[in-house]
Amino acid sequence: MSESAARPLTAAVVVAAGKGLRIGGDLPKQYRRVGGRAVLTRTLAALASHPGIDRIQPVIAPDAADFFRECLADLEPDLGRKLLAPVDGGATRQQSVRAGLEALACGEAPDLVLVHDAARPYVATDLIDRAIAAGRAHGAAVPGVAVSDTIKLVQPIAPGIGRVHETPARESLRAVQTPQAFVYATLVDAHRRAVAENRDGFTDDGALAEWAGLAVVVFEGDAANRKITQPSDLIDADRTFSERADAVSASAMTTLVSHLATGFDVHKFGPGDHVWLGGIKIPADRGVIAHSDGDVVLHALTDALLGTIADGDIGTHFPPSDEKWRGAASDQFLAHAVELVRARGGRIDHLDITVLAEAPRIGAHREAIRARVAEIAGIPVGCVSIKATTTETLGFVGRAEGLAAQAAASVRLPEICAELDAEAEQAARQS
Image 1 (cartoon, one colour):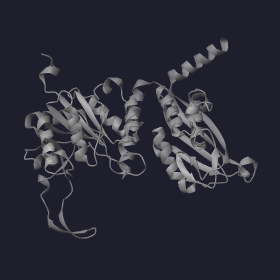
Image 2 (tube, rainbow, N blue to C red):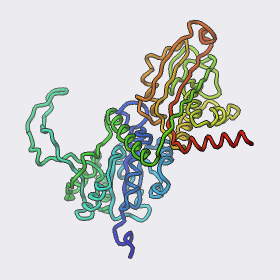
Image 3 (cartoon, rainbow, N blue to C red):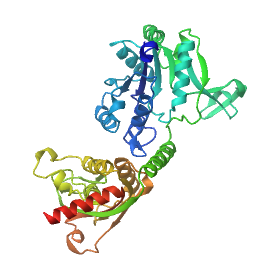
Image 4 (cartoon, helix red, strand yellow):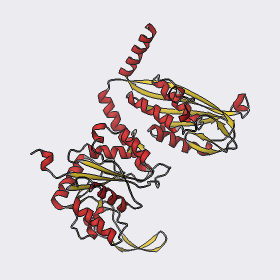
């Protein structure tokens, strides 16, 4: 009997249906890029790479299918084979978990199920090992880490003020994490019972299992298994995963060659009440005349990145003669150029933009533009700069007939890529 046949069938439900907007911005936190890949992609990769997990059931928001497909595009094909088709979640975490559990029942039901938050991309192999072992041994188990702060139980007496009525001993307290492990049939029954009794609002499955009368054990968690909740968590995650990528790149490539390229775009003013700059919609007394959304910042950046790998320009990849791109959002143009750079093994070091316009003023939108460009490019916001200037009433910009942007991109590429480029160029000259 093979090892896979001898052990219980184990599935994981990944809860990714939350809006995750408390962290700021319009993009849910699970789809934000850290170190060049979405948080959810990293979480799925960590679970799928574990040999003890046989299948993974993602649960997403009904309007997040496009975001999820982008995550899959960054996932290694061999890992993606463990993923089942995503199902829509509900209005609460409890409803979303139940949707995932019910979806697993449609096929061969697993013996053991792990429930994990999409916003915990640091989940390590040994933590998953402990979860599976504890779930098999006890039927209901959650990871917990000891708390270092003194905890107070308070009774609210005014907004933001509470009166202490108990100080529990720290030795008995644990901060609970995911993945949480359960016998599948037991957990799905508990969820169905909660629905029948109109009980909702459980914030984790350990609490729901306790309510259902199950004996829940706490096994050793991992302090590094942090949940991304605050903007600072995204910054830390980006730094952490970028450093890991650098370490892998350093071991895989002997030399990196820096490539610098520029891009430029211009659009004439026309009817409208806004312009798009750097993926941000800015109110204005006029719009621009363009085939797409006319975002000069993203167009210039796209050309700059394409220039670093000598792969044509934006018109080559997205010809204005193609009606498919009429009115298209320009973030997809930049994202395409970013992926081409990554496909060549490149790392984007810095993006620099200068907007040339008499109006609109971008000062109030500068940080939003930096954040959006960083998000599309999958780089820290500190690696994006944006400036604006007028042309002192000279030229078409000075006459307020249109606006323009110029951009510079700095990219490091493996030396082998640079050598191949040189060989190709030489061959082209000789032909």
